[in-house]
Amino acid sequence: MATSKPVISTSFSYETLEEKLDIKPQGAKLHIGIPKEIAFQENRVGLTPDAVGVLVGNGHSVVVEHKAGEGSHYTDKDYNEAGAKIAYNREDVFKAPILVKSAPIVEDDVNLLQLNQTIISPIHYSALKVDVVKKMMEKKITAISYENLKDDSGTYPIVRSMSEIAGSAVMLIAGQYLSSFNHGKGVLLGGISGIPPTKVVIIGAGIVGEFATRNALALGASVKVFDNDVSKLKQLQNNLGQRVWTSVLEPRILSKQLKTSEVAVGAMSNEYGRAPVVVTEEIVATMRPGSIIIDVAIDRGGCFETSELTSHEHPTFIKHDVIHYCVPNIPSGFARTASQAISNVLMHLLLQISDEGGIEEIVWHKINLREGIYLFKGSLTDFYMSQKLNLKYTDLNLIIASRR
Image (cartoon, rainbow, N blue to C red; front, top):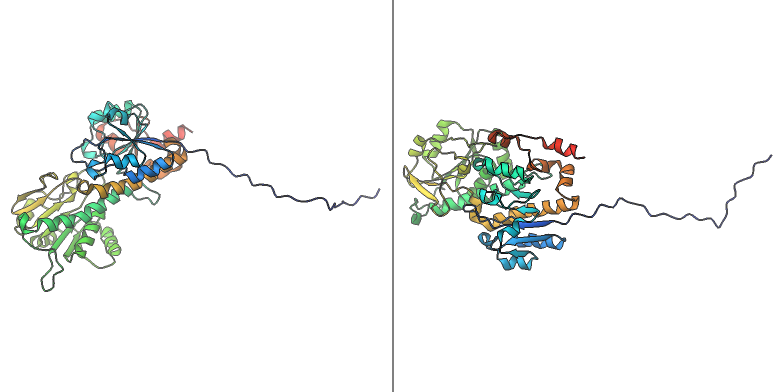
């Protein structure tokens, strides 16, 4: 039997079909609360009106406590025009499922917290109170800290911004207190023809040290940088794009340089715990009368043995004829700039949380974010905090995996 040939009909035509792509589930709508900070000398706010406007424009609702932006010179009207609701009752703000704070949770806040709330705020390891953490655990709080919040490039964006602000502010503060009207030596930092530049010693080559060096050089000062980490000193040279006088922390060299300096900046810190004391009282006593010490590491104990905590109202004291400026939280003195820096990071984070469908979804996809979480649904997931407070530690990766 002969096989029949295939018939090709002229009426037959090929049609392209639409490609079916995965549609991302609708993002979660967030309800965010911004309380007014009651912590000592905290002028910053977690979200600026511009950031609130972006969030409201994306369908989220924001409630702001009356005068929450006052310290950063943002008015209730600014927030209202951005689409936020102004609350005159603190309890109403704390009813929001997500709280954005610019200071840590304090004892007065604990009773207002809601079950299963998410809190984005700093944690100051030195001021941690076990009772506050325990109550947050009982309320099954999920908490993200500014200090440990990592971005996709593996850096800590808020810490970096605050360090940049502190480093830049240091030389402005030094210039102010070297003036005759502030009982300083009456010298300018430098840059005047025919006059030797003022000598600045910076201890610590991290971000604070780098920005302090950058600004001191821009003002025409002569800068000498100390750090025990040679790789940090190399990084500093590369970032500045010029050769700066650097040295490892050798006591005799450090002592010799401090004796002849007008400005000394302490910017050394450990990742956890107290900052190392690298300048003894004997060395401070040999410094020039009218010179100034700015101890940026004071919020972690300070780098100079003579340092004592001061405030923005009374920022300095004199010891051994040397002016000491030991104000913790220097960025709070430049609150509007600091608020904008924090807000840029948090606005982006909140939009990501919404896109992913909530905090539980985003921690599954964004591994970097996990480092910032110290409480997850009431479980303490920060190992250092568990050791310090003697509380049970739970591995966050295990919690996330077990929920899948």
